[in-house]
Image 1 (tube, one colour):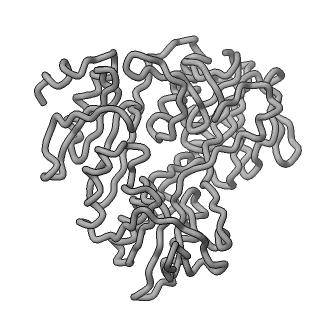
Image 2 (image 1 turned 45 degrees about the vertical axis):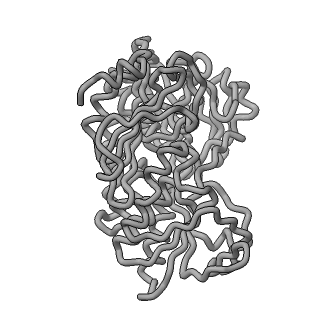
Amino acid sequence: MTSDDHVIVVGAGLAGWRLVEALRAEGYAGKISLVGAEESAPYDRPPLSKQVLAGKWPIEQILLATQEKIATARIDTYFGNKAVALDAENKRVTLKSGKVLVGTHVAIATGVGARELPFTGAGAMYVLRTKEDTQELLEAIERLEEDDQVVIIGAGFIGAEVATTLHARGIKVVVLEAASRPLQGPLGETVATWLEDLPKEFGVEVRTNQKILDISEDGEEVFLEGESIRAAMVIGAVGSALDVTWLEESEIQLDGGVVVDEHFEAQPGVGAIGDVAKFPLRVGSSVEMVRIEHWQLAAEQAIVLAKYWVSEITAEPLIPYFWSDQYGKKIQMLGYPSPKDSIHLFKGSLASRSWAALYSRNELITGVIALNQPRALMLSKEFLLKPTAVGEALSKEF
């Protein structure tokens, strides 16, 4: 890339902003245009369900890109003006306003949105995906009275974090989960069993095996099989939704995300990073095409793409990492195991609520998960840098 190039970054979230920073850090001096569907400059989302919702941080504190940083990065911004079409061959991006940007490189970093639920009162439900969502939720919390109850639909990572934060604020919370155990889908039955008592010990009621029939139009009653629950507010935390409809005429490959190679390119000069990217990842002895919604991974993908575009450097393979602070504990994971993989406890004990375990498939390590064992988790990263046998991993002292 030279100073005559023009990079159009579509998506002004973490991945998009980290790409801007990485391009400049790699020495790229050409034009950059940053397109965002939201009116806001790029900001950090994880604190929304933690520090911001807890009232510990003002919402302004989560900004990643201040006006000063935007000026220093020398970029043109198009906030509140989402991309509606891409001509990948000619690197042309059409915006909602009708403006057309023409560049030499296009990076797709549009992330995901909140999954919509098919209920009568879906419009009265609260979600936690954007700054605006969080501001609305904070204002609603201020209107709660002493005995009011909040119902959270979904006991996954976001649902658990929101429940934790609200309970810490003295708000009565009931969490409804369709599965037989929280987190069983992403973590597997064994690990979910190890974690299932955490909400109760923290003081949060989680009801499993719940089939929700509907929500009242005013959002104040949840109808279940055989009963209904009154709520001062209902919060939906049932996962994310990917929207790539604007790319359907672009001729880039779509398959549950934007399909990219190890450099995070969909085709020469067109890349995809963050939640929207479906990329090759070595898991155990095989390579899988995966799409992963992790904060850390989005930032690292941006650096990989920037290095490749600027210097044609092929980066080392990435190792997915995520964490979740819930019910007074910290869950951390490395790798990308299947929930059906075998589990091997190697540090701590279940009774102490402090442990670390390995996932394996075909006798090779596929991931590491830890509860309040950050050191053991990070020391285990070496098991994912190359194919590592279970026996070899378990012989290591921690």
